[in-house]
Image (cartoon, rainbow, N blue to C red):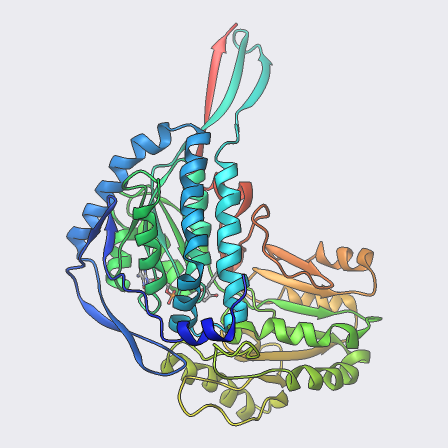
Amino acid sequence: MSLSAERIAALRDYVPRERNLTIGGRAVEPAGERWDVYNPATEEVLATVGGATTEQVDEAIRAARAAFGTWSAMSGEERCAAMNSLADLLEERWEELLASIVNEVGTPVSLAEFLQVKMGIGHLRWFAEAAKKDRTVHLGPYDVPVPTKSDVDHYPVGVVAAITGYNYPLNLAGFKYGAALAAGCTVVLLPSPRTPLTTLLLGELVRESNLPDGVINVVTGGADIGQYLSSHPGVDKVSFTGSDAVGAKIMAQAATNLNDVVLELGGKSANIVLPGCDVESFSVDMHLRWSRNAGQGCAALARLLVHEDLYDRFLESGAEAFNQMKVGDPWDPATNIGPLIRPDHRDRVNGFITEALEQGGKALLQVDTPLPEKGWYVNPVLLGNLPHSARAVQEEIFGPVAVVLPFKDTDEAIRLANDTAYGLAANVWAPDLAEGRRVAEQLRAGTVWINGGGAMRPDAPFGGSGRSGVGRELGEWGIREFLEPRHIQWAV
Ligand code: NAD
């Protein structure tokens, strides 16, 4: 996969044609409220989309319920083949998917290609393979009160409501429906109203695929439709990716039916530079990573904790990284920082910067090239001279803003790293792997990277604790969220 300059020129204006919901394998015209979807790099209206009505959500849940019997009864091999037929279509139509993501999210093309399209397809194929796995556990003899033997097998929970945030539409949806389908569940998918176009296109591919009708349904809508879907008695489990504030509401809404939830929420992930590190060797990589997708990533490692002896070298080498940050047109392959999703979000991010500076914080490193005239951009900045209690240090900013704090010894670094309400991810830069692991094992985070890496693997769990969420996505852990264990015992 790689795009020539001609293809980029052709895709720059691409907007998916698909505006229909996908319900029970059919294209259904949305009959609810309509709204505009913007290109955050140009501020132009990309498309006007319609939302589902509550009746259409009912219909989608009924379709998912009807399909559940068929889908859950199919063999793992059959489900794998059907899921791979969708992966084949994603591969065939990857350019459209990519263009849709770049135009509606503003993700730079090079990032969108690898982090959304390539990873999205790879993850779906992994889940397809995992659908074939026999997860039955055979227990040994047990004699109380009479001799017995037992197996523990699993049954799928049923209909899953999958609600996603705006920042990585293809991935976030794929984590949910991939795992749910592998488990034998069916899905009603609700994308963010700010970036629904990629998911509507996905719905079109679902209809063309060999998935039985109703296995994946796509509806659209805002918070009211999200609320209706997540509290619907026809749903068996809610899987949500988004902010912690909405996550708390989802948990309460799902509780009306005593439904379980998977919540993938925000973070304020620590990026620790231990004493003895060769700072210059990773500085560029480190800064380009926390700022990618303009910082609109749940696992952005934007709370930098640096040993005091390395602090000056850290800032000097960081200047080189900031020189390499190119803010602007997401279609320019050299761009690594695109726009923020909407002007209100840009203003919120700028508000964090202003408040930190007013509180005595300093912009230690920043990009100060002029911003494009159009588009909701913020120049990346590294803030310092702030107490660990400052809002910019404690809260998720979701923009190209990082904070740096010096620490005196490794115990202090661990204490600071764990001192937020979140627990999603962390990174440790260590002089050697043994020291990196020693620190990693003391961090409250669902993922810890040591000396780089930074990848989410389909076979490893992703998620967090505290305000970062409940449960895990990806890997066996992600699939088990959609399975219930069943103890079968027989007398011998
Ligand atoms: P958001 O919470 O504002 O919205 C997410 C979705 O929830 C949208 O589809 C929205 O329409 C819907 N929604 C809003 N109110 C609802 C309600 N009462 N009931 C049901 N649904 C409702 O999040 P966002 O701004 O789209 O995404 C950014 C957030 O997502 C960040 O906090 C980020 O960290 C988080 N995120 C987490 C992960 C992860 O895997 N942990 C991944 C990506 C993003």
